Image (cartoon, rainbow, N blue to C red; front, side, top):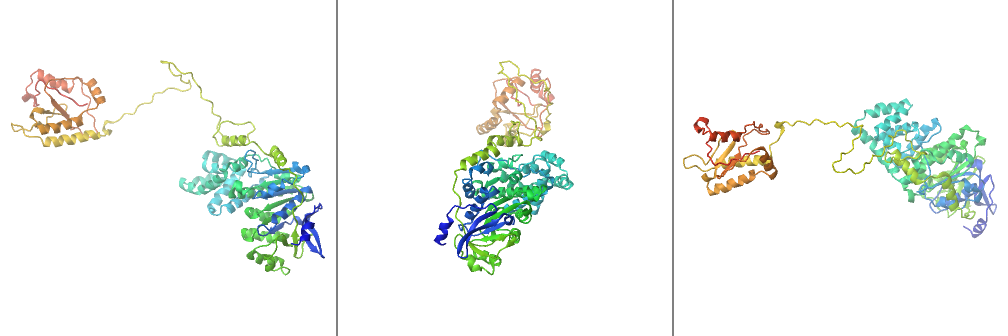
Length: 631
């Protein structure tokens, strides 16, 4: 770039009201500044070039020109540097016109509800714009089923009063809330989907169908920086009003502070809202509509099908676009075709070989691919729209930054907060209330609470009760004794320890030594209480030890002994006789409750009356005998 150009370009520029100066060229051996007329700008401008070539500087000059001339402008900046620089150049007489939309300002969130629609005819346009944004950002999980369910979800919420994006996941998971929303739906197709089709899904299929939607929407809304804005029912920014009054809307969507996906999704929704606001101006004559110019840096991040509609229809609504990005491959085929088919002015900086081949078709025969690839810094080739006709391609140089900083950053931010932002704590409290997690609610609540349960009253507190004092019982509550369930004895399992004892008993009886008279030392006696009586005198020393082990296994616990002592009397003599339960009762049964005259009393009474064993066919129970009975 020649030195004389730098000297001339550094001078202060006084732009004309109807022409936006942005470059200068060599005309008849003289460097002359030139620009583009307002009417030609309504046919949009497309800027492409590698990073660091001067695209942002050219756009800054154009935007400052519009601000100084009192025009309405908007900026969508995914990096943040452009936006922060512009607010530092705002003249004092336009500070009240600035709306600085900065989601990273956590303590002062602005309200932006994409589902807030004033015109019933625009509901389908809002849903289509959101679907296009979602599809562009989540291509890896997108499917026809996900698109079908999400589209019906958005259309249902658009008919429900005071809906926000928070209602998407709640509609899919909360049946009670879904019924309330569907009751408000008037469209028979949407109503039929929820009442017939979705209600017919089984639980497994429904969970699989809605899981991708819940994951992605939940991920977007989990960030408080996004949730506190999109969850407000009433938008604090009226874009239609800003366009009609020629205000300045600066949207700082820094990826470094919001995250790439959040920045792209929020930018796509804002552009959709701007498009709808422009189309709303159909209710006023065209000559009364004020021009509004929207600057979009790195616009491939927000290049949804809405862009194609803006390029083809926005001219009559007085909305002009200035779009800049780095290479053509960043655009979808549909958007790329719309750009080259509808844009009036094309400006190219140095690009790669692949893009040069495509752009050469626009600049031939004046410039070839080699010329476009070898452009120097700040040098451009362009086809300029002049009075509705595209000029022959020519070369030019962009101008250095115009104007000087005014130091207005802090004042602009403060004024914008006071007029359009709300307190973070109040917004989060309302969101918690809407979610049913917090009972407190302010009178000026912006969250829909028509479907919420009534506030829970605080529990009554009572003074500490003294000893012997009865607790208070509420009058409303009636104390009704619940009937106890009877447990059938046949259902009671046999404890494991009893099974072990029975097996030991059988083993011991089978291996018992033979008595001197030819009878076993251990005899099976069928008493009335089903017990074995074993005399320790008839046992050998080895058998006594083994038998003692069985007695230890059989020995009841302390609690069992206490219960036994209460139920039956103790009888004691000197001779020690071990009594072990045969376990002859069938499994899972409980012995019958003894009659008033217990079994042991019967045995003792027989001894006292000297009943002969031959008559009773029972084992004689000798005197001085101690009998232990199991419980």
